[in-house]
Image (cartoon, rainbow, N blue to C red):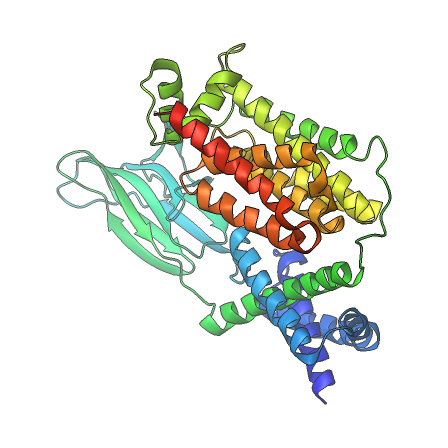
Length: 460
């Protein structure tokens, strides 16, 4: 009985997510959506019952009951966090509504005319402009605004989904008349007369036909669906026992994914040339070009940017260096994953997702210390994978220990909280390797401390 209930919950969750996210919004009214969810859930119930839960059982069969519960709860928590971090837009529950603004041609006794000047319509939360289209009467464009005298009555119309409110911006002055506003079937009239000319913002709140239960149900369905995906992918990776089953990567194993990333991110750089800069970026650029240096932003990163711009004094030099560095770090990680035995098709999917994710494309061309910090952490993670794969034997290599120490030092100096993070990461390396190599596993940490002390003396 419990298995049947679980299967039905999963079927309803998957069906709800599919209908809300993939269904054509224009033709699916709430009642039609309900029927579609029910029909699709019945279609999914059989495959899930026969194959879906069996696959999950096989993936988690090596775990205890407590371990299985931890996997399931962890997947649901991860889905909830991902839905916030991505972030996913709210489920499209509401129906499209229409807004009509009509110049009536009427006025109060004090007004000298019947003019209705409309500046525009905006989303109340984001401020994004929305288009009002003339559908009747005479409207003319004047100074970037829409004007009607209401003779005959003239109407502007907008239709779409609106769950967070609208703002209608108009002009009020001594020649203004009255406007009739209809939103979602509710109508009211506003008198735009004012003794002195002014811009006026009129807030509008669309009537809501969506209950709190519907919103919670839709989010839960999406979390369960995404959690099921995470459980399948995570369980498959965890049960693969990749370590020790890989092979030495080929010549192009790292170059191909790095080249894909450079190609995609170069398009972002060209589109936002010469890079994305915020207030922090401009402040740091001013320090670098005019001085004096300040530790408001870590001096080490400011000096890194200064060095990168000696040949080409442009933000694009820093952005391009970040593109190449992140692509190289990702290619390095892909080579290590190949040694772990991760299949080519899986690494290909990872490459596509990593290169095409808009967040990566925008951030990698943004002049922030956090970008170099993130690249350093990716390299450290890859080095940690190498230590785990070789059971610590790689730390016998002087070349590896020097590279690890330099990477830890660079990570520690890129942010004010970098030192404790680098120290915590060094503990991870020691914990991974201490059984095999004893005191040699601490040499990278000692090298880190030496670098920090030297740089502290230099930057006094």
